[in-house]
Image (cartoon, rainbow, N blue to C red; front, side, top):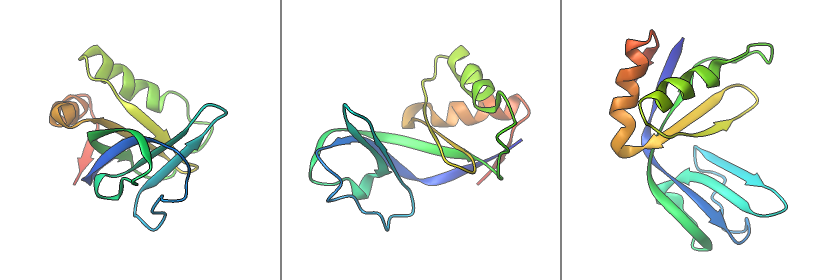
Length: 122
């Protein structure tokens, strides 16, 4: 399976509302529940109305379009990283999954995945 490194810094935020979200940013993930509005975006695009924000995340995506019948792809990656004490923040889209790790764990994450048969693309 091929993983593509996304060469930028990410932040994970809780925002008051969506009025200041930069939707033209290349990567922008919004989650809304009855309790909160969350945003994953480029660190350079963190809105001023962020209530809480954690910087220092790096990301990669599973390359290609994943069929909904495929089972365990995200689970395998998260298990490999958890076994090595690396936490993740995952975002799923219709086509694929994005996995974020803290910057200080990112290189170690990539090496672990490479050793376990994943092909890494820059």
